[in-house]
Length: 197
Image (cartoon, rainbow, N blue to C red; front, top):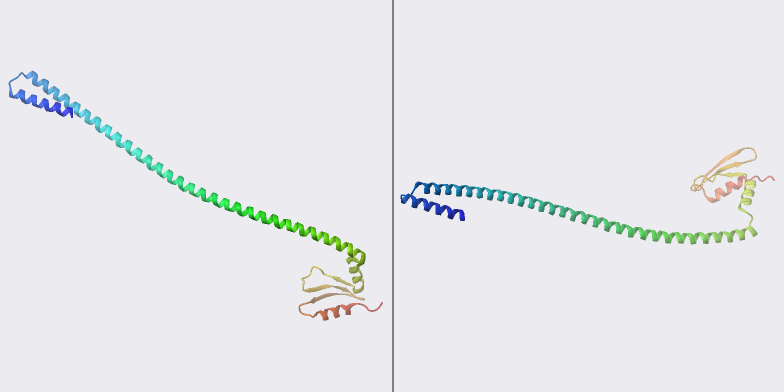
């Protein structure tokens, strides 16, 4: 603003000099001063434009930094939500696993109690059977001597398989209990026993 006032004063001074017949020296001095003011004005304008460009560049950089910061904050928020969801899911799974472990521990304790009870009952049965009942091995040996049948215990549950060692030759047994009655099977097996003593 001051530069424009100075220019106005110089212009008025030039006009007044032209109107009066003053010396040429003063006119040159005023013209020089006018040129200096114009140069100063141009320099000031160039400096202002440079500063304006710098300010615009800084504003752009600040705006870009702000946008980047907002994007990072948004990504960080999304990542945080994802981590919170994963943490909640892991907590639920941990609770579920703890419940399952507690249930399995209870079941294991129950099985141990059942096993101890079975062992106690087996001991009681063994004590009772040793006194009054012959051993199962003795009964099996006695049955084998009488019937002369060697049983196949690895066959299917509903099949009766084995080898009968008869008086002359051994013959295989293969009976299907789903197709034959219990009476027929019993009669057939008794018919294999040698009645000659």
